Image (tube, rainbow, N blue to C red; front, top):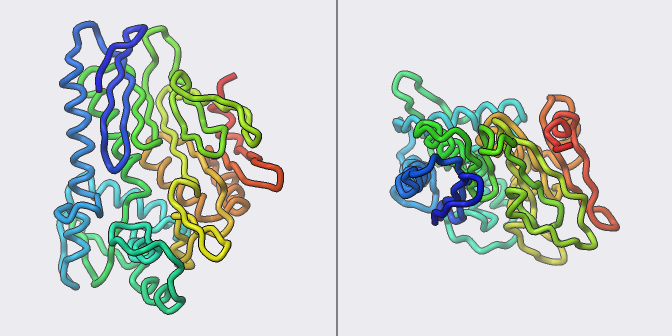
Length: 334
């Protein structure tokens, strides 16, 4: 999809990673929109080829199948994403863990095709033994990663953000002065629009809304809706994690797709949504997941203590309530 819009902005879009991507681009008159579209799609296709557990031939799938004790050389982008994942894993004390793949599959949220149901405690214990970010050993000389045996990387909580960053970097490299890129809800913006205004992004205000460019947002009022929150992004990224996009119910209990690697089970007190603003979408994406895993109260306390720009939306008896760190409030439009 590519079309010109008002104010010398062009809209591009397509599909990737089981979701959609879009870009609003400050393109010069006569710019080759087809080439820009193809370039963004190429960047995102490379993420899929390297990091999709749904693609048997991807680098991450080949690593999963690698024999114990073997080293696998990683592509440069893959290595950069893994570095970020391990950074957040260490800083969050394992709330974010790129080796959570076996548990994601066990609960039916992964690519293995396992039914979504509550597994037996023994099965959870068995799969937990295969997880743990400290199991990963890197060899810097050739970006190689050791497969100790049975480790299954899962970068789905960071790859879409990385894709948004790659797309934005591609547009910058092609001389685009300003763009707002979204990949499955993870957003990267830079520069100012042709009218001199910064990008403004509407953060979800209802229970089933995703973050979106404010001009494309659907703002129908609802009984449990919070006041709309608009973020100003001049050179920043925003990502949202929540418990409602993939979940199942069993025995009157709801199980969300966000697995706590520290327990092997879905997060019990997950916020309805956690939104994080950061310098790049890869970090925003990872931290939104880590804070969700921590739980609403502990996650908010961690964000406040570590200076993260975060907003938590929590269900209470009457609907939804929100809490924001000062760093998040600083991005709000006035």
